[in-house]
Length: 288
Ligand SMILES: [Zn+2]
Image (cartoon, rainbow, N blue to C red; front, side, top):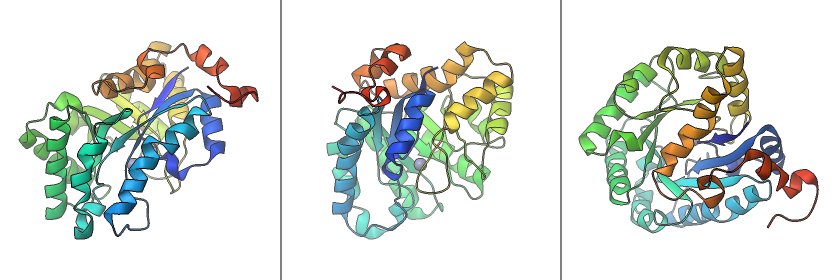
C-alpha cells in the first residue's frame, strides 16, 4: 500500500509520527501553510515559517523515506489581521519554489470581508503561477460556507479542475460534486468526519476526484487516519485499485498539475523500493 496524505501539518508532529506513518505506508505528504494557534504579529514570522516548510520539514521527512511537499498561503484566520496583509506580497517568491505544489490553505474561517479579499487575491495568485489551490471550508455553518466558497471560485475564473475543496462532509460533498472541483475529507479522531462516514460518502459519490487526509496538526488528530480510512474502504468492499486511487493516484494527479512534485513521487516509486531505501526503518545509515 502507498499513501499520499494531501493535507497534514507535520510542523506540529514528532519524529515518532513520521516513523509510524512510514511504517504504515505513507510515502508522501503535502503540508499546507496554516494558522499555528498562537496569533502571529508580523510578516517576518511567516517568512521563517515558509522557509521551514520548504527546507527543514522536507529534510526531516526525508529521513523517514517520506517525500514532503507544501502549499503556501496566508491562511483564512490570519487574513483578518491587518498587520499581516503584506504576507500576500511575499507569496510570489515562494510560489516559484521546488516542492511548492499549490496555493493553500485558503478560503473562509468566519466569512468576513477581509477573508473575501484575501481569498480572491490568492485564487488570482494561483492562476498567475499556474498552481492548483487547496481550499479550506469553514467548520461553522459549513453548507453556507461551502456555497459561498464555490461562488468565489466560479467568479475568479480559475479552472475548477485545479481547485481542491477540503473538510467536506455528507452535506457539503454533494454541493461540490457537480462543479468540476476536487473533493477532500479530513478524517479526525472525535470531531467532524470519521472513517466510516467518509467511506459512506465514497460509496455514494464514487472515487473520482476524491481525496482523504488526516489534517493532523497541533490539536487532537491522528496522522494515521489515511491508513485507517484505507482499511475501512477495504472492509466496505472497495478493491485495492480503488483504495490506491483515493489514497495515492488522486493526490498525485491533483498536485501533479503544478509540475512540481518531487522526483521520488513524480517518477511513481515502487513502494517496496522506497521502503527498502528507508535507512531509519532499517536502523541503518543516513538516507542519501
Ligand atoms: Zn489544515
